[in-house]
Length: 148
Image (tube, rainbow, N blue to C red):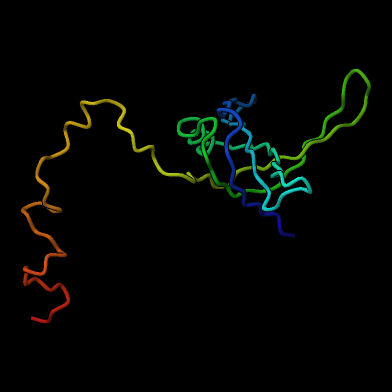
């Protein structure tokens, strides 16, 4: 059987790290993604699905370290079902989530420097390469594909 999911959306909260109990504890991160559908409803509004994500081990560490609420992220994983019984009523409950196999950044870095000192360290030389060599300058006779 085939069980693969690929989704992209914005984190609804920062990843929450947990550790399983047992003889060999495992790291787990839980977070949510808000995923917009490709179409709108009759009123012209976009519909958003909220999907719970679980990441294990190194993927959990990655998520906690690099992903933040509001950030655009993509992932691949498997659809899983969780079942439990409500203690008060004895009623069986279930929910679905995606177990992350691969997690990706889906947007670039912010272009603003974090401090002015870092921005001042940019070299003043405006040559595009060290030593003044410009591979797109027609005055250079260098041809990397020429036969010797």
